Image (cartoon, rainbow, N blue to C red):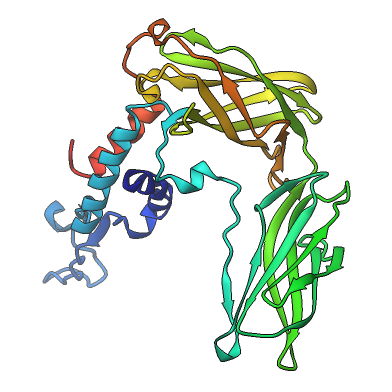
Length: 349
C-alpha cells in the first residue's frame, strides 16, 4: 500500500517540480568605467582588453537533498510497479477502497449537548431505476419533522423529497428515481431538535447507464495472460474503461483488472487480462466482480458517465495455468524513460 501511495503522489510531485527546480543563474561582471587617456579627447572611447569585456557565467545548483531522497523513494516504488503490467495489479485484503469502490462512508456530525447525527446510504453511486434509501441515525437527541430532499448539484433543482419515519434513534425513507437523473446530487436531511432546525448534507452520484455488462465468455490463454472476454450492451458509443476485481472461489482477492476500448453501440466486447504472476498459482475457479464501467469524457468539461452490470459478479471456470508462458513483463519505452528520469533526479545514474 505504501508503494501505491508513492506512485499516486508521483504526478503531483512532477507537476510541482518546476516550482522548486533552480534555474541557471546568470551573473554579469561589472563593466569597467570608460577611462580618459592623456592627449586624447574625452569623447574618444578607449578599447578594453577582451578579458575585461562583459561576460556571462552560468551557475548550476544541485537539487536539495530532501528532494533527492524523495526521488529515490519514487524511483524505487516505480521500478517495483513496472515489474507487472498496469492492466493487471495484485490485490490484497488491505486494499479496502479497491475491493469496494462504490462504498459510502458515513460521517457522524456532532450536535449540541453531546448528541450526534449520521446519514447512512447503502452506496455512493446509483444506476437507474434503482431507488435511493436514506437513513438518519440519531444519538442523544429527540428529533421531530425529519425529512430528506435530493437536489441536483448542477442545476440546484429539487429532484425528490420524502418524510422520514422510524424510531427515535433511526429514521428512514426511500426516494424513487426519475429517468433523467444524471450526475452529482446532494442529499439534505433536515430535522428539529431542542427547538432548532438542523440540516445535514452529503453527496451521491446517480446515472442512467450508458452500457451494461451482460455476460462473461470462457477465458483464453494468450502468452502470459489469462484473457477474460466481457460482453456489453452499449447505448452510447465512446471510449470505455472497465475495472473489475478477480477473486478466488473462496473470495480471496487476487487482482485488479482494467481495460480501455473504443466501443460502438450495440453488443460489444472488452477483454480483461490477468497476468500469470498475479494469479499466484491459483487455477480457479474464480469470481469476477466489483465492476466499475466508465464512459470517458470525449471533450473537456464533459462528465464521466457510467454503466452497470446485470449481475453483481460472475463465476469463471477453472483455468489451466500451464497454457501461459513465464516471460517476464517488459515495460514500454515511455515507462522506461520515466524510470530513467526518476533515477537521474535521484542521482542514481
